[in-house]
Image (tube, rainbow over all chains, first blue to last red):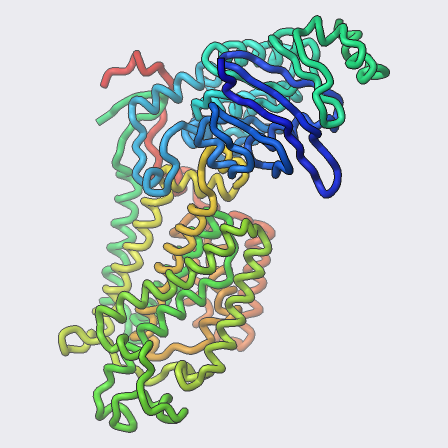
Length: 251
Length: 370
């Protein structure tokens, strides 16, 4: 089976600093890949390079067999790669409804946006997204007035509304309460029924809740890859996390 | 037609807004019959400044691009129209009785330059009034926005453009009339008969209403939503698949075209155009109208331009230092009413509230009756 997303020997350099060194990654249909690793391991950079936000020095990114290396962000987004950022990157001045409406898949040209009508099909899609992200009751509230967790869901909703075939989520539970984190896990699982999902996460409890395959990044390279158990028992991983005790206490 | 889906009671027609607009239009339509000659043309002039402010509101208020170059677009349109009026002076009215303008004679030109000659014809002049500023804006916009220059740097570039063009127009005396600009132009005629001031007033009123309506229509659509999103966070909207540069170039060019036409209508009224309107000082005035009126409110900048113009007119009689008063007013507004005078109106009269469909509580699409 062909991978939805495949990253081959990827290198990203920031003014001499090698942020990513020969990273390989494959993501298949309807699976959840969780990327973990200490701060500065290059997790967010990897996502940035995939969506065209950070320039790739060498290596390739393929999406559904087509090369997308160094394409501009809007092109990658239009092809079907959805991205959620680390901090909730939503439109605070707009309502939840308008945020989702903006993100809705469709033609994003100028003429199309001027003449766009709020059709029944679109309303149906928005309803569906709001329902999946448990935001129905807040539909017409300005995003400003929502809790931090709810803002994260708005952004997940925006990614969903793009109807991407692959969803990239950068720390979707950052700043959430335990209850919100659990709900986010359920939301992600339900997304994975119809999409491929790549999640960057710190919270090991959460990783265990959602993870199918884990990739451990360390200093710009893939250190280990496998199931939760495999990764937790990996010598090198334990060494990297030693002192932080994240893996061992979580286990 | 109440079509209740997902919280929107989809009344496609913004009744309240239309009623308020019609009342406003009616007041402006009655005004010329009660005003004296001076006030009639003065108000015409202020309406054009108001329209110019609306055009800036589209790029600054909605899209977040602060421009000091809107005076430039206005003046480019103005020059196009001034050449037309100058070239259509009767031979008797032209000091030298020849078919090239007096200032060109003074500067030793003997042949009408090829790039000015076609402006003698009305359709070409009309087109140039809109197309020259629009093309100029498009070229600048293409380079600025495609090269991802943003924020304060754009503003600095617009300042530079205004200064550079002022210097350029002053230096090209033979073609532009230099510091004096183009003076002693003919009045605007329609099939041989001169358009009276009141006729000009209604043409300008129609144009102002058109610009306001077009701007409203654009900004309440999804397009307007995209503009506001660019304002708040342009990086994010690109990741949703929108070509931000394309949107910015479009609104920037459209805004310049609107400003150009306003400038074109300004000349038959003002009877001259000069580099004064290209300069940063005039560009700053436009920014002040928008800031005081309220960014992103459309009607706010329009009203602010008219009120401030009237205020300056009276203050001018009392003191030479009226600019000081305007400066203080600007400070007060920026510090205490950052969203402009329009934000003092009750929420239910806000543009968003008047144009949005009524909301009801959410319900699933399957439950709706259509």
